[in-house]
Every structure is written in structure tokens, then in C-alpha cells.
Image (tube, rainbow, N blue to C red; front, side, top):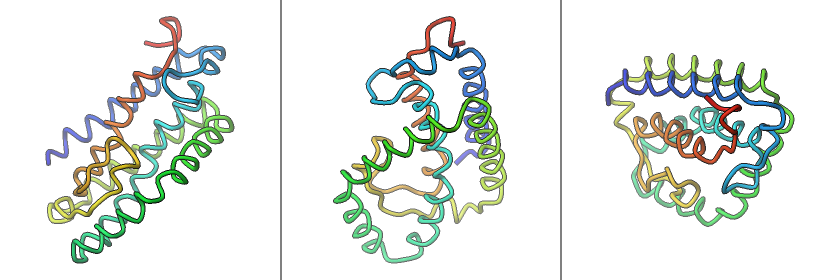
Length: 175
């Protein structure tokens, strides 16, 4: 894994997130997104959430990556069975977060989480980055059935880029 590429992806997403908020009008943020039940502000929070969950995802890899593969496979199967409740919580959390946390709060939180991810990535060993586990692939289109810690670090930017295309900010709202 080329850490510098991941650092660059984080910074590109951070810069894009800032630009999206900087150019968004209040009406644009309240406009429904394309293909989701969230408005643009809630979808922006959901895009941020992809980075916020990396701490939990990486901790799972640290634990399950040291256990026999069947343990994480069973765990992923159990989580896949709970996809419907997960979808409800995922929707409600992003709806609530995007409703309560405004522009300035989202930007500040995004900056803090990206800074933390840079530090964490730099502290990872090659052995840690190669460790992996089975994931509930039904929970997100960017979860693979098996992911290494390196894959987990790449996940949020893939998620971000996908949802970026669902924003409906007009040309006056978006860079």
C-alpha cells in the first residue's frame, strides 16, 4: 500500500468537502439529494461519517485479524443478517447528524477526523496494514467480503466519491 496515495486521497476529500460547503447555499443544502432519502446537508454528513467510522473498523481488524479466519467470517455473516436494522440506524444517524450539525461543525469535524487518520496511518506497521478480516459486504457497496486494514483506509474516500455524485447542489452551489 502506498501511504502517500492514501494521504493524498484524504486531502483531496477534505478540500472537496470544504469547497462543497463553501459554495453551497442554504437552499442548496436543504434540497433533496439524488438517489437517497437525505437532503444535501444530511448526505454531506453521511460522507463525513464514512471517515468517522474508520476508528471502529480498524479496531475490528486489529482484533479479528489475529483470530482464525472463521471467526471473522461468522461475525460478518451475523452482521449481514442484521442488514435491515443497520440500514435504519445508518439512515437515522446521518439524518440526525446532518440535521443537527451545521456547515461549520461538519467542516471542523471533517478536518479533525482527517488529521487523526493521517496520524493513525503513519503509525501503522506494514504487518498491521496487511492484517484483514471478513466484512458484512451487504452493509455497503464498498465493503468487500474480505478487507485488510489497508483496504479499510481506502474505503471512506471511495464512499465519499460515490456519494459526491448524488449531491444536487447546482452550479452556483458547487465548485
